Length: 106
Image 1 (cartoon, rainbow, N blue to C red):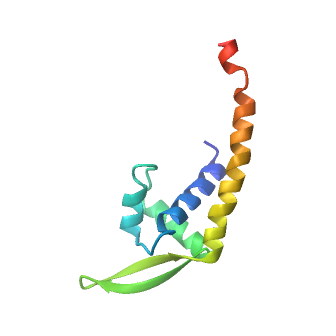
Image 2: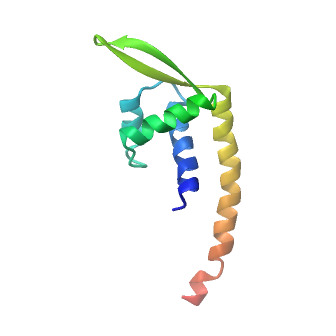
């Protein structure tokens, strides 16, 4: 898969993982596991990129005596998810065009 496409897909996956409520790194990885394999180092790179783009905010809170970073999606992050949904309609259309007639030529 094209690296830029995959990067964009992973960004949206991470945003989608926190769209219904604040979350933290381990929980995000666990929530995404049925859909995509994501290492901690990759996740934290994505989270930093999304924070820099103002698509999420970060707060630190104590949990079981340890500090944990919680990530919160912003309006810009929610907007990115909506943009993705609209863009994906075009990708599906292109995919259907590319595969048009495949069954009859096989």
